Structures are given as structure tokens and as C-alpha cells.
Image: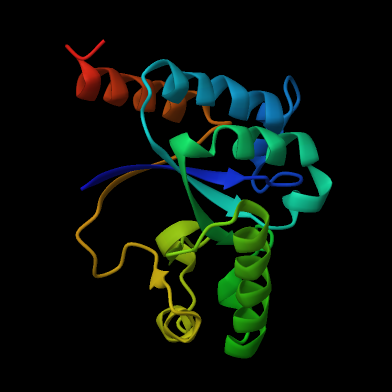
Length: 173
């Protein structure tokens, strides 16, 4: 199984200096739309890793996702772009439960996995235990998922995704 995963969807604000610099010229919404055109052009599925805080603050983005939901698998990134490793297990559980329920309700989906903000460098030790309580997978740990993770606002990563999709669909279009 091969999955292309678009991280930080519905993010309010920025999470790194590089991300901040990208937002000087275009909004996160505009960067997302630009990257999403690739998936639409090639009719290629994409996993959107969603931050629940953006649901109430970015209704135009939410509506776009709903309108195009047939092209997406929607998964959990969290409520916002936290360093979850700095939370206690109970704080993490409450935050993720609330975010999971909000995303599931808004998009009428069943969340299957939690993809941790800041990746493997910042995995909380309690992650697998909390995910078990929530009935979801903990990132890609222990699963046979070949994955390419990218950020819609990162031009270099988007170009790599485009090339990957073109190679995968070569001869089909």
C-alpha cells in the first residue's frame, strides 16, 4: 500500500520559520489549493491530516474538503499543531478525543490513525497507549504502509509529490 499524506491541513497560523516564510506571499489556503490541483488533475487519492481547530476558523477550506471528499482520506493530526510530547498522557487523550470527535462529526468519517505533529522526532511516549484507548492507529508505527508525507505549503515537497504521482500514473492519462 502506498499513501501520500498531506500534513497540517486546516492549520491556523504557522508551525516553523520555513512555514512562516511561505505565508508571506500566499495564505495556507492558497498553498493548499495549488498543491491540491495536482491530485485533482491526476485523479489521485490523498490522505489529509487535519487539525481540528481550523474547522471553525476556516469554513471555506472545510467546504472545499467536503466538496472534494471523494478524493480524500481524512485523518487526525490533532486539535492544533502542538508538541504533544510536552503533554501528559491524560492531556493528550482529552485533546485527541475532542479533535477526533470534531473531525469525525464535521466530515462524517471514521478516523483510523493519528499522525503526530513534528513527526517521529516528537512522538510522545504515551502515544500508542492513548491511540489504543481511542481505537485508532498510532502513526505508521508497526504497519505496512509505504508513505510519502508532505506539507502543501512546502514548494520542494510539492514538486516531489507531483513527480511521484506522474510516475505512478504514467500511461494512465
